[in-house]
Image (cartoon, rainbow, N blue to C red):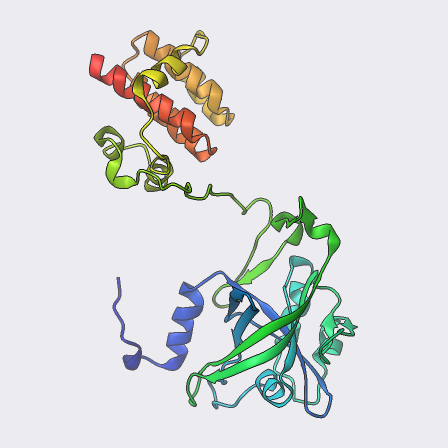
Length: 323
């Protein structure tokens, strides 16, 4: 690793480290009006949500690194205390990139980017029609974080009205696959939260899991299970009963199995076929049976089948103790 104190490097290098190492960052597409009523639209990726009561978001319109000047969004917010913050989706990301161009204060980024103005209900700045998630906001506090090149200006805003596309909802929750958000990384890089990149993690159980420190040694010392797998196994309220696990595995119907059938099931992403093949090889006292059972457990964990993975591992441990 390199070890760097910010005071020993340039502000530009600091910014490159932050943009490359802290991400992906959500993008706030912020629309404002100047004191004279001129529209402005600009994206910011130093942004997030910070509370639900009152609903609060914050973003930083940092000073320019080249000359420490403040941006139009900052100037407009200080003057009018109002903005609209939109989420950025993949279908509009190129237009949002255009809106990030440093036009002069008299230029309307809505026109330059081709994004469409919609009148807001409570605040004066326009909403962006193309965004399926829009928030009308009032500025609660502007906190300067410095007065030099690259210094942040933290705009803390209260949401006074949401505008959300109806087709985003599944079972009364916003479906991230339908949202199709994009986020910012360093340089020219973005990322897309589409169906191929999304995954779910089961929340820790309400009554507390057993934790890493209570996992059996044969699991902690596994050469096959990953650290993520161990954390999944640690998210159970108590250690499963070994006898019950063995009984559950013994109920699986035997098949005519070989290592090739096991790996064929693995290539087909068939976790149950993998498990049944491994168990069948155990019954034939195959020399790699316990290893294949651990591989099955790993595959089951990757599919979120924690209980069955525990059964496979406890069965494997029982087998290892009898050999």
